[in-house]
Structure formats: C-alpha cells, structure tokens
Image (cartoon, rainbow, N blue to C red; front, side, top):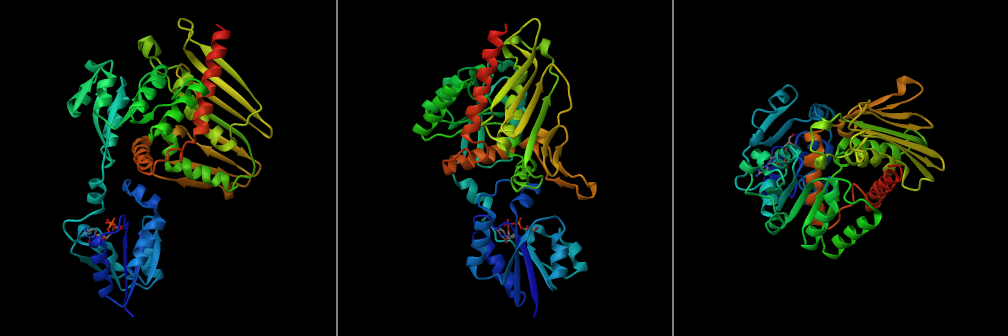
Amino acid sequence: MRKVITYGTYDLLHYGHIRLLERAKALGDYLIVGVTADDFDKTRGKINVRQSLEERIFAVMETGLADKIIIEEYEGQKIDDIKRYNIDIFTVGSDWEGVFDYLEEYCKVVYLPRTQGISSTKIRSAESTLRMGLVGYSAFLNKFYRESKYVNSVDVVGLCSTDLQKMEYLKDNLEFATDDYDELLEQVDSVYLHSHPAKHFDECRRALLRGKHVLCESPVAMSKEACDNLLNLAKANGCILMEAIRTAYITAYSRMLLLLKSGRIGNIVSVDATCTSLSNFNSIDYRKRWGSLESWGPTALLPVFQVLGMEYVSKHIFTVRDEFIPEYDLFTKIDFTYPQASASIKVGTGVKSEGELVISGTQGYVYVPAPWWKTDYFELRYENPANNKRYFYQVDGEGIRYELVALANAVRNGKSDYYISSEITREIANIMHDFSEERDQNR
Ligand code: C2G
C-alpha cells in the first residue's frame, strides 16, 4: 500500500483545496491529511483564518478523500509523521516548491500545480472589510496602522486627531485625516479610540449612536453607570463595543489562563501584577497625560479579574501623586482581599519596577517575566524544579493584529465579550470611579 501525506489549513474549503486532495489521493492508495492547529497557523503568521480547527477538519472529512486526518501542531512534525505512518510520498501545492525538499531524506516529495484563481484569502477579502478610523494623538497609532495591514478584514482609512501636524506618517498613508470627530464617523464603519481616557465615554457614545463599531483603549468609561450606558447602547444599535487590552488577545496569556483553570497549580491564592513604564511625564502637555492607573490599571487588573473574579470583599488603594499636578498618579497600588485569596496590582508611569506577573497556587505558581503583558513565554514552577514547565507562543506586534482579528470576528458574529467579558469592563470602570473618588477626597 502506497501511503501519501499532505498538510494544510483548509480554511473556507474551496475547489483549489479539493483538486489538491484529489490529486494527492491519486498518487497512492492511502491519504493522510494534516490540518493545521490554530496556534500553529498563528505562529507561522496565518492570523486571518476564519474557521475553527474543528470546522476545517470536518470540511476535509466531508470530501471523503482523506483516509485519515491528523492535526499539525508544531514545527518539524512532518518528519515525525512521515516516520510514524511509514509515508511513501509527501505532497503539497506548487506554491511551496522547494520549501519541503528536505523531506526527500525520508520519502518522495511531489509538488502539485496550484489551482489558479482561487484562495481562502480571496474568499475572505470578498467579504466586506471593516472601514476603520483612528482617533488620538499618540505615535502608537502609527504602530497600530502598520499592524492593521496584516488583517485582511479591517481597512484603516481615516484619522481624527487634535495633533494633525504631528501625524505626518498617517496623513501620508490614509484616505483622509480630520480634527472633526463627526466628519470621521461619517466615513467609517468602526473606530479605534486611543484618545485621552476622559474622552472615551463621549467618543464611544457618539460612535455607537451612529451605528459604528468601537474598539476603545481601556477604560472605556469612568464609572459602572457610564459603562452600562455604553453597553446598552451597543446592544440596542447592534454594534460591537470592544475593550482594547491587547494582552487578552495574546496566545501565551490566554493559554496560561486555560492551564490555571485546569488546576495545574492547585487553588489560586494570590495574583500579583506589576506594570510600569517611565514616561517623560514633564514633557507631555498635562491635558494629554494619562495617569498610572489610566495607563496600566486595566492591563494589570485583567488577570486579577479573569483568575479571581470580581467578588472581592475589600480593596485598598495607595497612590503617589505628582506634586505639581495632583490629578496624576505617579504610582498606584491596589490590594484586593477575596474570601480565600488576595491580589495586588502595582502600576506606574512615574515609577520603575519589575513588570512581572506571579500567580500563586497551592501546588505551584505561574511566573511570567517582564514585560508580562506582551509575553510570548511563561513558566509553571513547582516545589521540585524538575517538574517545572516552560511554554512559548510566538507573539507578533504586541497583540494588536490579534485584537483586530478578534474585532472583525466579533462584528461578523455579533458577539464581543469572548476575550474580555462585559462584567470585567464594568468592574474596571468601577475601579476608575473609586480611584477618582479617593483622589478627590484626599486632595
Ligand atoms: N492549494 C492549491 N490551490 C489553491 C489553494 C491551495 O493547490 N488555489 C493547495 C495548497 O498548495 C496546499 C493545500 O491546497 O497544498 C492547502 O492550502 P492552504 O489551506 O492554503 O494551506 P497551506 O498553508 O498552503 O498548506 O506546511 C504546509 C502548509 O500547511 C501547506
């Protein structure tokens, strides 16, 4: 029996894929098809895959051409599979000509002519892309725009900024730029808000009222009531309101959460998150400054709320303010007490510390080194170091492109809180409210 193997993503299965499978089958008597796992596709840069692994496997199975279907999960797996299944022929489309010549050492390699005129990318792009407008004044928007080029279902077309003269790069690359938010809203389907937190609520509200989808830097609002107002507006208008905490969309972080939920370190007793980045505080126009809790609070709070929930018994806020402009906290520490656990966040744009995340459990702990919020790596550590485990998941672009893919999927599916629940969004807004109350009382 001559055994053939081939691999692919097989997203949105089309006749190009089917013709490949038919010709692969005809090369021998038994065909194994390796369908790539989501993580593996992500690490090799395929972030726009629309269907789940299960959907893609089912579609290949439905063709009736595969005698066996396996999942391709890691670099180098092809060699393992060729040995394990005694493969005679490896085949793949001619777009991979030469890439797999190294497999000649293990079996015959055949490149089959690729079917012209059809691809999953073409099918995806045929679907409506989201026209997006950027709002803000930070150079971060340049990075965001560059990252958006990797996402084929989002098209960043416009900019609204109070600092247009500083945004030369974006003005050169976008369809239009304006300082008038309403003008921007008329020309887009969605906005990414990176303006000052004090403006988020109003800008979210105006966009949602006009039926525009919103990706907004956290905090989206400065109180639970205001947050509820936005969430209800989004629901009433059939729009997506998504919080842009990039960490939530990074594979390593989300895989870590899954390991915690599976009990790998026992019962979680403590979550300690630190995020600092010394900003040139004094050189920034005070009206544009983000305080420490505004800048880093949502990110640091994310693992606390996602791991321990929001039913804390009490919290204590400690903050160090800028001596000249007391509205701005140089450093804030919040300690949470839960019935059977504790949590602490330390955030600072005027203080430097070790930006690590440590999650402590009754059988071990998770250690995520700085900068944990955009990590590609974490460790599970135990009493016996021989049992320690290290995990690596490639991250490209600090998570921005994954965040945009999540937004496009949320708009398509009409559901946004798969990564960050609306309860967490509300509680972050609540913390902001309590913080500003405390600040005003202690002024
Ligand atoms: N294909 C084709 N004609 C097309 C599109 C795809 O012959 N118009 C072939 C590809 O060459 C590949 C298979 O169909 O052999 C699956 O294509 P994809 O799902 O795009 O996956 P790809 O990443 O190209 O698969 O490690 C090997 C890769 O996984 C190959």
